[in-house]
Amino acid sequence: MGTKNNPAPCDCYAKAEPDEPLFVLLARDKHAPTLVWLWATLRELDGEKKEIVDEARQCALDMMVWAKDHNRKVVGLGQATLAGAMELVRTVNGLVKESRKTQTGNEATGFEMMRRFLAETHFEGIDEEKS
Image (cartoon, rainbow, N blue to C red; front, top):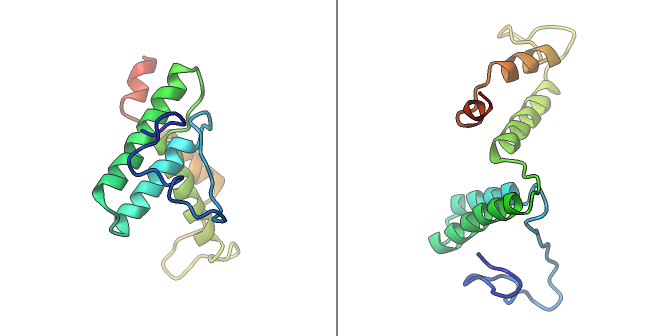
C-alpha cells in the first residue's frame, strides 16, 4: 500500500499531469475502502493490469486495518452493495406506475418489502460475533 512517505509501485500521483484534476481518498474516510475496492473492480472489468488491480485491493484492505487500528468507523463492502441494490430498485420503481400493477404482476418495491428483505438477511461472520 502506498503512503505519503512511501508511494506505491503504481502510484498515480507521480504520473498525474501538472494540470490534471485528481481526488485523494484517505483511510480516515469511512467510505474510502469501499470506493477503492469498487474502482479496482471496475478497472478489472475494463482489462486493467492485474498488478494495478491487486495493489488497489490491497490498499482497500490496508485502509480498513488502519481505520480499525485508529478506532475509526469503516463502511463495509456489504453496505455499499446493499446501497447499490437499493438504488437500482429505486430507479426501476421510477419506471413502474404506483397506481397499477405491471403486466407481470410486479408492484413497485415499497418500504415494507425492503424491511422484510433486510430482516431476513444473514451476514456470515458478523452475526456470529454478536452471539
